[in-house]
Length: 250
Image 1 (tube, rainbow, N blue to C red):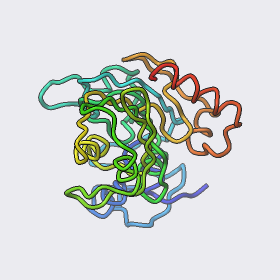
Image 2: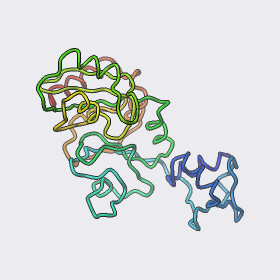
Image 3: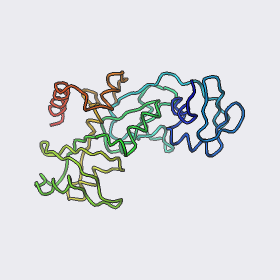
Image 4: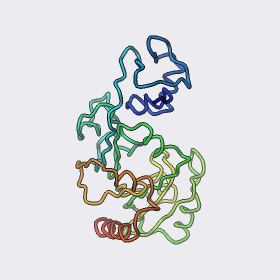
């Protein structure tokens, strides 16, 4: 079976497909001793080398959901020696975080060896929903403020896309389809309601459920299907998980 070289590198956990293309373009990849070219196809019998290191045949991909604790850095390793997410999950070659949760935020974070999955979950064109429970200062926002948040907030990096905002106790549930840095915090601060605590409770069709801070679980095929296809999750299952989420977080 043949496949594009960049896909092979992504499946092997070397990098996302886009980053693999950059490695190839930079001349850092060889196939059977020759410098690879972008768009080149390979088979299982071809020897692929990146920066002098042989790329092993891709193993079955593994994906984990974890409850990232507050204060943990969403990176593979931190040059300042601060605790990073990979310190809290099994040591699996090629495992990397999918997107980011800032240091002060907590909740659902995915880690995977599947570069293709990472691309599908983080590229803007796929628009996977991300749901956050936010605790805020400043009291309860008015309906007008909620409408403003849902219509879009002008930030320093441009107008945010339409969102959904629901009241929750003394805070809010905020649903977005973008992945800008600290976006929910910046949106709420822009309208005068700084965030005091932020927990991501859902990504696509996958929920945080009963994971506790620092805990993780490995996803199975059902989880992965629900993650990318929330519209196919049975309605009774969806409502049950939503109910449990509101019971836990208010």
